[in-house]
Image (cartoon, rainbow, N blue to C red; front, top):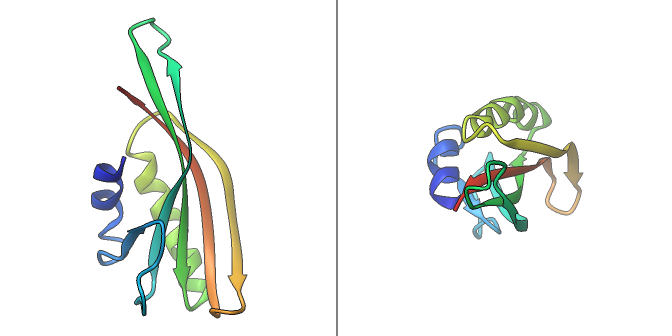
Length: 113
């Protein structure tokens, strides 16, 4: 999925799309994604296995409005990756220690192996 995520989102975040953690001294807004689950399922037609990736995306911004404004374009871009998307979490948060606003999207994607 990494080969799909970065090209899909890099334009929204000026290339600031990172797996797992933010770099030291990041520029905002930025997006971090991490895999929070992975499983294999039988394909409906019995034609093999399908891999199911559950991925959590976190949008970081200094201002709430900027964080919120990136939520919908991020979601729409991710929905274009494939038709089998499930949404688990869609919430905002604030990290007082970093003084950053965060929007969390937790999604599952299916991909044939």
